[in-house]
Amino acid sequence: MSWLPRLWRALPVGLVLAWTIVPAGPAVAAPCTGVTCVRYFADITVAATVDPPVPVIGGVIHRYTVQVTNTGWRVGGNTAPRPGIGPDSGPVYVNLRRAPGELDVLFTNDSGVPFDCFRGGSGAGHVICHAESLPTGTASQFTYYFETPGVPGTYQFVVDVDSYRWTEYDETNNSVTLTYDVG
Image (cartoon, rainbow, N blue to C red):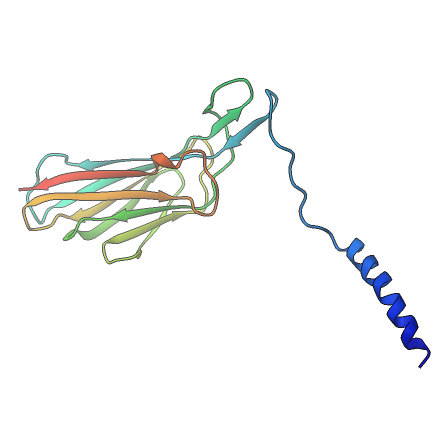
């Protein structure tokens, strides 16, 4: 068994060689500083309207129009952040949280990148709409038709946009709440 002592002496050399061949991990990018460093971001903005905005009677068809825009932002250099041509967005999810008592009637893609919508979310009152990506500078608009509740009162409809699989410039413009009255 004269080969066993040689094996034990060769083992540390083999481990050192193996560790030098295995990559240490992804390279870290240099910090972005100075007036020559400029970054571009996608940024999703949501706007919505309710029609008609005046009090309505219960049991009639009502609609929400939702517009989702990728404005794009330029950040850095020797200027303040400003809108600019940025990258296309990643997947965009729009969560329509309808008011209690509203009944789905129809959904239409009006313009821009089409959204696919389905009932879902954390409750029966959610409709989830999805688009794989929005190019910078484009807006997509869709209309959601519903039957108003039969009980008089003030109702709210919340629209949230989620970009959870990618980083956008400003997430504070990703939600809007609409209010209407049933009389």
